[in-house]
Length: 421
Image (cartoon, rainbow, N blue to C red; front, side):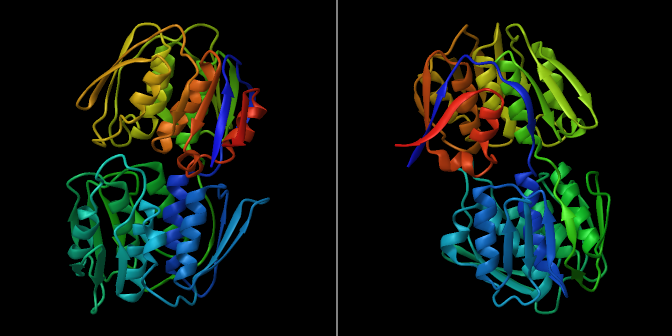
């Protein structure tokens, strides 16, 4: 086991390049399974544990993958798949593995997959995925720890309404409907940039999808898709995390590749807190030379405030002037980082899905753990501003979503190192 040692009190300065988006690359890798006739070549693929895991999963069903770490490219050859069921020990590692269901159902008319794993931040039911498959004509069988989906006569386009704009369900339905007969109209879909990225990749492969990022999305089924080359969008959550790191440490950082359009709520709240931001086509510059002011946030589906930035903002509010509140509406179990921040002296009270944060001048270094991916980022941010040396454990969560975090922070002047326990 490894841990991070972070000496707080050092302003971050310089430029950091944002990697390809975790939440975009995983569904795109799943979509490569639809590629017949030729392999797909993906660019800007980040060095992440989740990318390694999903690559293992697609290899387990017969795809060939080759990752070039230096060029950050991933080649996936899915022209000759050998199975439609992935090993349960791999699937349970990561929730995004359920995204294989859509492309396998679309291409072969059947798929079987274990119930997925991932961060323990809430139930995140898959009922909306299954509702979409059923609307397209598939039959669902739920057994002990697995789900089997079959469409022996192929999939038929239909009008589908999602009770909640689920990102995963939207992605799975897009992939399944891309080769269904006729037209599918998906109402109340998720509108995240990662949805648009997946639709763009599917269209490059030969799909006919219109309206991704809006409501509704229209999918006209095509006969088959072919592997293609595609570049993944930058990670807006990674960008947001470095934006907060710059502001919290009273630093001055240019976040290269950050797309302002994808970060409007984060930008608005940072400006409200007193940070100085400059936006241009190449990225966002964030600086601050005085204590930040407390703000109130409420997480919502995109284009609202992202739940994946909630933990990081709680770390910021812990050392901001005044009292701030956080209302979490997306996941019911996403305050596990509260206890870890309290170990560092943070003053936080929680009532159901609402947290009240009383800002204090300084956090004190402590031994804390990453309870999930974004909570791990919050602990790192807290360590960057704490008095003393903070130890962060359970790094496997952080490795799932942050590409070379230590190297990038060191490049900005942070005093951080990764060592064996």
